[in-house]
Structures are given as C-alpha cells and as structure tokens.
Length: 222
Image 1: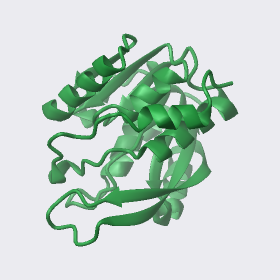
Image 2 (image 1 turned 90 degrees about the vertical axis):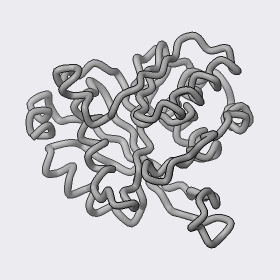
Image 3 (image 1 turned 30 degrees about the vertical axis):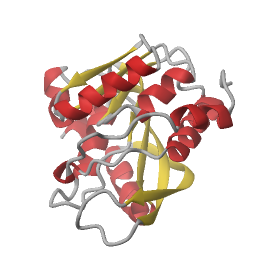
Image 4 (image 1 turned 45 degrees about the vertical axis):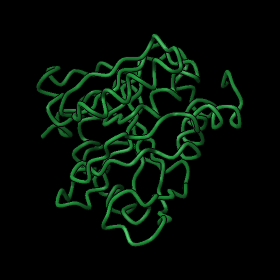
C-alpha cells in the first residue's frame, strides 16, 4: 500500500522545480507531476516495488521520479544524471523537501554497466528515457538495456505508445517479461525556441519489465 494518497502525492510533486537550463541535445523535459504521481502510485499499490526498496532512477533530471519514490516509502533512491546543471537542480529539490535518503550520481547512464561490472544491484529501476528524437535514435532502448542489466527486480519505463510493438519485440528478443500497465498523456510544454505550439499531447505507456531468469542478463548486455 502507499503511505500517502495519490492526490496528495501529485500536489507535492507539483512543487518540484523544473530544469533551470534545459538542454535540447539531451531532450531535457521535466516529467509532469500528474504522469509521475500516477506512474509511481501504480508501481507501489499494484506491485509494492517502492516501499523499503533500493531504487535507481536513470536520467533523473531534477528528480521528479526520485522524490516521488521517496514519498512513497523507498528505502533509498539513487538518481543518475549526466548533466551537472540538472544534477544540481536535483540536489536543490531534495534540499527543499528535506530528503536524506536520496542522492544524485553524476554519470553517463550508458557507462554504468561497465562502471558497476554489470551487476544487478537495485531492487527497482525507474526511467523516463529520452525518446530519441534529436539525432539520438535508439537512446530509449539503450537506457532500457542498462536498466535491465542493473535490476534484480522490476524495471518501470515510460515510452511513446507509438513504439509499443517495437518495445514488445525487444523484450521478446531479450527474454524479458514486459507489459504496459498504464497509458498516460504526456503534455509536452513549449520549452525550446523551435517549438511552435504552447504544448503537445503525447500518448505514453508505462511498462513493467522483469527478466525471466538471470541468464537473460547476458543476452540483454550483448
């Protein structure tokens, strides 16, 4: 069960500060509070995968998912972020909420398996990866591969609903159990100069992944 109600969680997350200096090359967009709260609440109430768990948040940005996970009882959350400015935003947000069981590690997500010897260290892994629209096609799958390599439990990831069949195909290829557990609407705000509209509504799936056996990890890592 969740230690706070969904509405209360979303109200708290609405006060998480956004990127101060978003970088288009990194596809930096804050995970909306309504998306984060609904996703995290489902993860905890349906699967009990946050409370007392050792949680990893890949590409954590200013910390929306990390902070929400702590509010739902995570034992400890480690966020990983490549951008030093975003990592600082993360730490500032955690200080504002006076959270002490969460930290941000500045590193390239794609280098983590080599850095940590590809060991499944985390009970639960969360990620809202870049969608791969800015000359970095496939980055979402690369993030997911890292997450599955480092998870000893479940992985929860947000992906465009339009890529659902592709995600299913990759999961089958890796011998990973995968199911979309919720479909959400991602309201992408006008963040960069090239954006022509105030916002864009994008359908996204919240996926739950779990390796069928630890032998799957070697196949994923290839």
